[in-house]
Image (tube, rainbow, N blue to C red; front, side):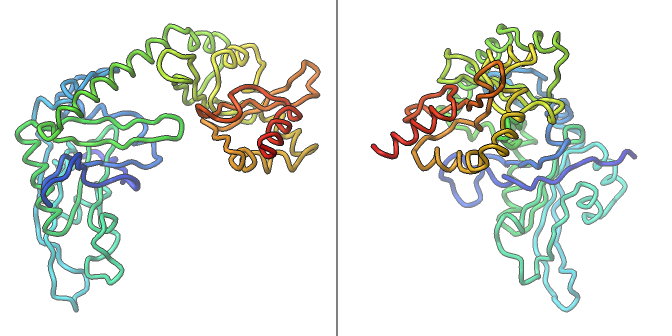
Length: 363
């Protein structure tokens, strides 16, 4: 049997409710995420197991609906016994998982403790431990992997009833898979959504958001930056587009480059990525300018973010530096500010930015 390669989610795991419902009613489950490779590369196994088409740009819930019940889907309800022999107590618990390897282990009559350990969903504390509360942190555990499905382990009567309801939704093929996403350092967890529970207005919003996402990536493709950077021999871990000021405005890009001793990460304009292809601009200059500022103006770098925030200048992303002249003697800073900020987006010399900040303080 192959090793089960699940990774526990440490953030955003729990029941999904899109509207007010009765205590046990749910709209799905957020499987959560962790900063791990298993949660970075999509869900090819789950989509295949659920019969969901592997589309780069799905539109609406229809393109995310399961079409088959996976043979590896298992629901196990049991009574959890306290590990403390002095405590004569049990607690209802249940395990729902979809994994070929775990299903094979289950078929060989493995106990729940063995399954939970293999799936990385063992509870950290005995339910009789005085440190345990009724919060999801102590009563719900989930894990998933890009290559080996998912697992949800719960305890407590209400959680068991909810998990059984989720299992029943799988059996009637009523589950849509909401993909995890990673944009810069912002993340959205993988979710199992009960499709029949999704209101019409939410369905319409999903379709609209999907269509807008497709238009964004069409603009990304047509701008030609990927081929230009490849031709320049440059590589990256992430290059993701966004509209600078709403759909149809200029594109900006989150860049997480290779060779970060020489290249800065952050949000950059299309012109700045063109400059990177030529070995110029803030991607290659920001770290050098920042080091220069630390040596010549140490107070500047330390106070910049706080000073901008105090002046009411909210940044859309991390500021980057660049040289203002070819001789590399005049440092400047590029700001991408939020709409309506008292200082607009642009590249500023230190003197000019200080002057603007001083004027704001005097106003």
